Length: 185
Length: 185
DNA sequence: ATAGCCATGTAACCAGTTACATGATTGA
DNA sequence: TCAATCATGTAACTGGTTACATGGCTAT
Image 1: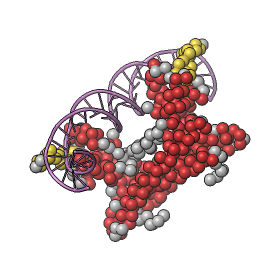
Image 2 (image 1 turned 135 degrees about the vertical axis):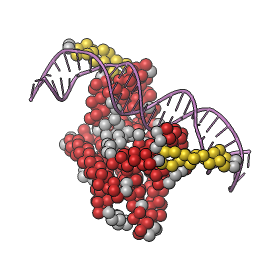
Image 3 (image 1 turned 180 degrees about the vertical axis):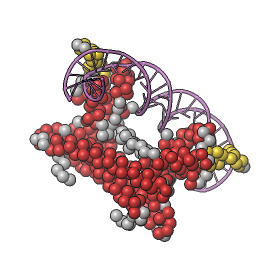
Image 4 (image 1 turned 30 degrees about the horizontal axis):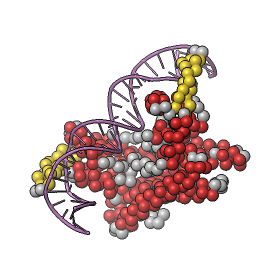
């Protein structure tokens, strides 16, 4: 159910088309919630049926019509209620860890390559998060204050990536050297 | 597709019934892969159809028959291939972060309560991981060496929980005091 | 030319959750 | 007597992914 609420959150900040929302998911909140355009269009349809959003069609020269969605007062009420509700942390399901768990010495070369691949991915994600953070630090204090909570979610993304990188490096090195980790590290 | 392989990993170490596997998922590898008994029974059925596992029925007094599953040579081949294959990191989808992102001052009390709830959950999970780690350190070095890779996945779980706790504490305090985070922290 | 952006969607499928169902044994 | 453990499953549903489909405009 959270995708619907994520959409409501974005539309509450600013009306937009399905296409707009797809971009905003990718750029803005993609580090904690991802959604494809297919999913977004389907959910917008459902949200419209539930009267939590409504839209105006905007004709455009040489392009398909744009549907500009906005949240309804009802949608805002539902959103408020959801924000105050509680839910449990998402379950972790990570195939890489199954592989680390199960690998035998003859699998180590392939596993090391895979760990390196993941290292690279996480380093890239971290770099992009840090770039975003740098932009935040350039803002004046009043503006920083206004987007403080979104910034805190970015911090979480940064921490998350850093944590992965540390573990991957450590694990990579330990497997490569085939020795025991030191206690208390 | 990873659940199937996770099951193959467990059966490769030791044959077991659906029920056994449910326990092993909960205790052993639950920190990186969770599965309900319903899912496990369904997947075992499919794995059997694909000839990647087979089973013997064991009659039991006063209890339903136990189906003891074991991996087949074919299953082992498929498993080896999968371990060496590569996949991308799982996508993150976390409702709590949507809430932090979207919260307005009037939502802060509810949000703080929610952050505290999550803090507690993560502290409990960390405690259970640390208890498991303590058991590992008590083993002699040869035994430690033998289960080194599974231990590395536990370390990842520990790091993950610690990271959450740090972020939750920091975020909780910042929202409670309603002030800006310090740069470079 | 060809890739990328703008802009919309449908359909089939896969993975995971929730609800429902049964029933004996053991310990508090 | 009530909850937990052992032991198996089916069915309906929800959420998300992959594949398919259309088509003009703009920049290299």
